[in-house]
Image (tube, rainbow, N blue to C red; front, side, top):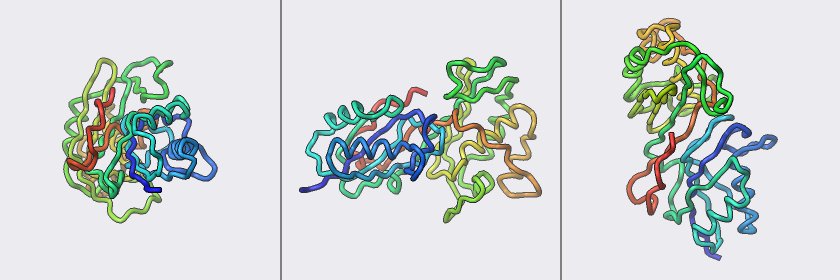
Length: 261
């Protein structure tokens, strides 16, 4: 039977998972999706995600692809998947994709958002979805520091230790910091990301915003000068893979409405 390449746009709460990528002894988002697909199609359907989000990280627009011989129309398959998946994982779209479409390799831009709650009281309802900073935050100082991080740089200093990669050069196309009431939303868009890169960028910018790191230290960290080190990574709970963008024509229709954050 002829197989077809399918693309999936997925939203998930990463709290209960050890990340996106399948692991032998821990729950992952990839595993629950593959198991649900196998139940529906009665055949294995390995899938590949655009971003390997870490434990506790959420997604509003993760993209994945897989090959299946199912004859179900995309909308019927989406409905069937959502009927089987746990409540913390939802498939927003299923699309028929070009046969050579690759969710990870074809991605032109990945957009992450990090959400900070700026208030003295700890959050009761949002504790799984934001990082609370109890003291004041200097937005102007953080924006000045963020300007140094935009563009094409070697971000090796912002990579988690012990994570080999062919190159540590990334092109950060946007790094915006926007207040929304008591929330502060960081939006970071780049052609690629290193492991924990966004969380280390945010952690370092928050250190500037709370006065524990001078703005000038960011340039030293980026250039590897002296003993300058990044601040600890911001917690995983505030991070979201918001959207993945592709060249025109790689997916047959838009990915749907933008993320809620």
